[in-house]
Length: 415
Image (tube, rainbow, N blue to C red; front, side, top):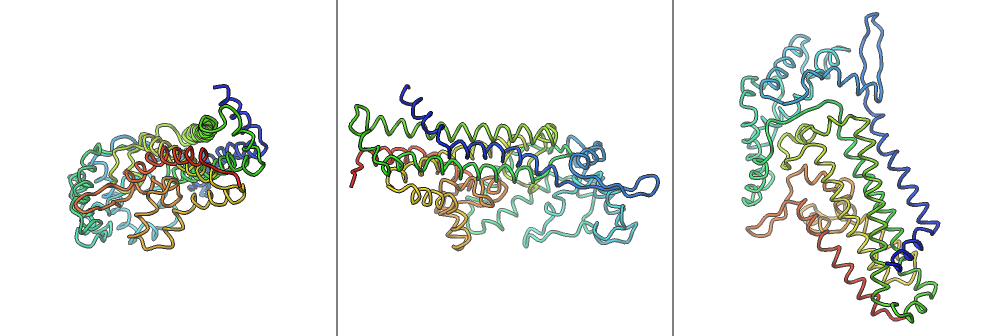
């Protein structure tokens, strides 16, 4: 324990570590605040003057408008929303909400618009996946709204996984476990979730830079030659370094993520976390989660990704003798999922990037979007949902690369 404390102090007292950890905390507040600046609304007051609202004012105004639809998303509510939408467009002779006169959308459609989310998707053509126009949908069919969604997930899985019946069945089974009817509470948006992923990716990069010199710096300065002559200079010393890097990285990530969620949810409103995931993403998303549970899931997945990436970085550190080369290689592995996705055909790329340590937080490839999608690993008659592949890979890689690091350091020979 004493050696662990000494190693922790040694790492934390370095100027680079202090700068990077401070930057992580500053970015946490920035990332939590930025999405709040995006909302915009406007209305015309009693004097005919246009009033523009931004940020928290726009969110409060939208919450007030949509207060009547908050809570359980019943088929009756969805039907009334579609009927009102169609009546509004017919009244003004418009083909879509974008053709309405100024001010009409905010006054007549915005109060119930969230309930329109997913209607076109639910009634998409089962053979082509093409969604119909809102004006062409019969409101009476919405009385059986959730059964329509059940039918849609079956047809969607056939389109997404044409030659893989096992994947089709898993998708149907997962969706059947989703709690219905959905819940909706106004005020939240997907931007906050996007920024949670972005923050996790940045923290991963910063912690990678912190972990990269753990062994390499001693090789480069020659201090390792001295440490190896001490009583605990090999296996125990290596284990202490590994645990120190894990502890610092995990603590920094957990602290920043907790602060982010606390600030973000306080600004948007904690009631928003009860909104069903399906009301923000696809109407037939497979996870049985609300936004709060999804935030925790993404945070936990990010922690596993961070530990897996740190474990790989430590292995590289035990092999490289130059700090710059080690940092460069470690950062390359952090961005490698995105490079593979862009460079290789999707059918090939998905097999590679999904098992890399950083994949759960790799921006557009992150586990948040994998959970909202319908991609699977198909191995003969077996099918594994992509988020499960990502998490399983991280669970395996953490002890694997840690063990390889320990072995590499013990058997290391100076030139």
